[in-house]
Image (cartoon, rainbow, N blue to C red):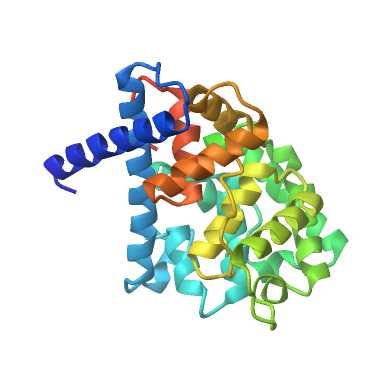
Length: 301
């Protein structure tokens, strides 16, 4: 985006945010810079969404799937695999959300995790490698957890998973594997034979199932996982809201922007503002989450 276009976009977003607040009799008492930073965070979210859409339409090489190669990129790998090995694409998506790793670290955590550091695997830590009997699986995952903890540098979870610990990895992964197998596999769960008639209703259904069954996979991780599956066309789902009220960070941001309201009204206004600005619910949630950490100073996602 050209600088002038970007500046115009920021100004338009600021004006639209204030218009929404005014129409709903919400306070606009924050300093001007705060609305500008929120606009910038929204643009970041929108651009990240556009980047994924561009990747979906691009030619991607198989090398991106190998965590031992320089070209490794798990987002590209999911796109490459989704029509070739659906189960693996879903598993890799889970690992990506579990670590909350990013290209900013050159996928440092994902390289070690998916590469099975310390396990001497001939291949990556694939779905086939981990989908074994409970005893075999737990032995492998406990060894992996220990190897990751002892590796130098020790991998760090992304900020959305800042309170996660490698010690939880074996039971977290095992609970996910058990859950998927109980449903009949990723394909049965996320691409049922009976066509999904309501994408948002199915999102809600899957959200409740994952929250109930997958250990240490909270509101944000579940929300982001399902959103990623939807974006990658791995599941026919769309978020029905921003799921603001269930998470501390986004909820703080919503209160700062909309005022001290009850959870239902915070969610309603997050949805309302997203619709008013014509942005996706995940993009709105991500922007508010990042914005509340530093509302008067821009820090890129």
